Image 1: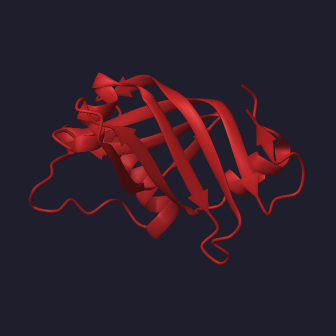
Image 2 (image 1 turned 90 degrees about the vertical axis):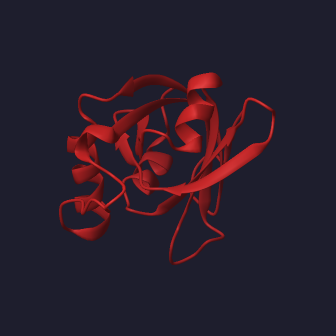
Length: 139
């Protein structure tokens, strides 16, 4: 689906996001994540072994809420489906995300290594928004 201009403009800003997934047992799981808009898709990144990655490999459907850090009542919720897992470009993409959010390359904690990073590409299937100009829903 093609995202409207007002939604795209909002997603171009480095606001924070919360990704919701479902575990194999049906339990919801939510995690704050950095994201990038790649065309009309959402790119996130994680480490191998994380619950969100296991959940997405089992069930590729997500909801992600991106909220304005200065006004949390202005937000976009996107529903979508994972269309790609990319371990080849995982390290490059976490650096891109870190530059967007921190202005510097990613600093690996002792429990992480570049080869453990996995990028996840999400295709939006619908959205709702609050506080943005333009259409607020696309079910």
